[in-house]
Length: 328
Length: 249
Image 1 (cartoon, chains in turn brown, green):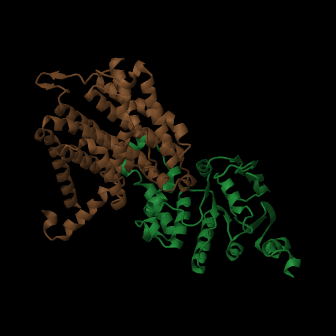
Image 2 (spheres, chains in turn purple, blue):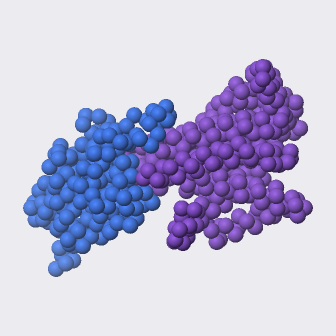
Image 3 (tube, rainbow over the protein chains, first blue to last red):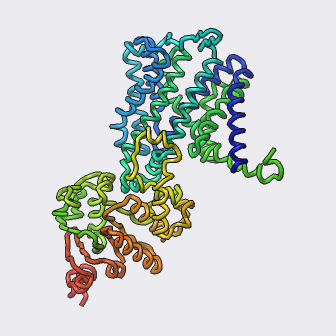
């Protein structure tokens, strides 16, 4: 037990060091990709939180967009300081999700999936239709970035990807910690119960509708936060950025990684981003990204339906079987 | 329960049923296939809303309440077959049953994290597992249990909600005689804890041996009501089950 704890602490420490050192080993454009990767980790993890109740949405990227638009407008029009605007973005996302939950949770399963897609498209059309305040098809530009920090020796320019990476890393780590706490609480157990048998859950007093709503609202809040992180870094957003194609990428990350464990979707998004940015880009095949993702998705559903996460315990067992290697 | 009616389109599944269950008794609800037993059951537990009629439980009108609200009133049902959280551990199945015993909001959950059930809940869950003879299975997945144990677990989940009354949906279905005998003991033991029981069942022997009173349904109506001995002698009941006497003769 004590040995396991030491191992865990060593692993956590090396993870922190690796994450802190990582941007300094990369080129400028790779640093930018790293920022997006961290934001996408939050997006796909919030998606998994919703999936805990067994519902899969096709509107999740739109909820990210709601947070992005709300945060951008709060900073641009209302003059909120950017960090406050980001929280406001998450709150608006949660509120929109709460309103949508009333029609959407009259459905479940496949019908919910289609319903969430339709609801998302309605929101996207509203962005396109209303030039004021959403900027129409061209979206919002010149979204303020986080104000530079100049406290004596400490000078941070958040336009610099390394600085923004550290900021995102802190926000996302805190968010993941909150999601982890929730999942491990009685609420998380109730989510699982609603997933595996909502009738049985209801028979012992679980208000299944309320718990589905809770999952949707919390998941959307964090998706909205990821959208806000995105908006204030890129500086421009438009309705196309949050369309169904992006949603399919999120689904692919979740399915390739697996959603049964907490680390599954992180594995998925990291592996596919590395594949996309390193392998495909090197080979000049970025244009083929949807094709490659589609092929990967089909391959995983057919041959590894429980995702990359299901490989991890098998690898661990292999290592243990080889004498001496376990402690190396 | 008064004048309960449930229609599905043109089909009247339950047609003006009156039924009252006394506190602390084991009441059996029997009848030939298609008599409307299960529908009655689903209406009482809030799975369906009745087309008309009233359900009163402990002087409170629970007609048409959603299932989780009925459960909160202390009226908890079980399901047929192995209706469980099959992919969850046995212990967690019972823990879900404790749902009504918790304060649950986001901030409490965040503060408690994984430590939420450490105290009296764990104790109660172990006690319930022991009561149903499931103590050895705590860490197993519900799907891995033998059939009889799965049925017992279904009742354990319900008992964890601390009901005053349990509705058991065919508790003996598909059981071998040994499992049936075990289950009869469990139902009797539940009653000994002060829980009122209404059960729907096909197994005549078990019903006759266990129930204080029996209600017989046929074609959506109440056909007869009385003690097991009275029901066994009642010509209407015999006719409903075996066909009318001059056909049989």
